[in-house]
Image (cartoon, rainbow, N blue to C red; front, side):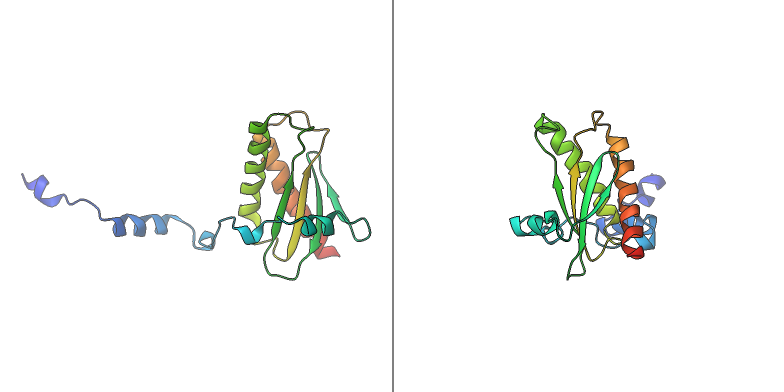
Length: 148
């Protein structure tokens, strides 16, 4: 009976406080992927694909077209052609992996518009390999923008 009297259910506030303590303090910034962080209009993509001021970075899986933007946010557009990945499920899976990688790295990419195009020569679509390639691409983009 003494055990039943001592035990109290945790309140929601107590559970949330414990979860906040587990998260590192530097990772507590907003990590969502909002509409403001997406390239959605035709003019946004046209500016990136314009040959006159095109800045391009290539990796095994991706071609990244990038330019500086006026805002303080990093914005991302993803192009996965139906010819490259025929199944819609796989195309959406590729987009999810890229978005998640971008979401985790967007604080480092502030002030950039990025269009990521999946290359047609990538045949094996392994999620882990895509994620590693995307993470490496963000680091290459950061170093390329700092050097220019």
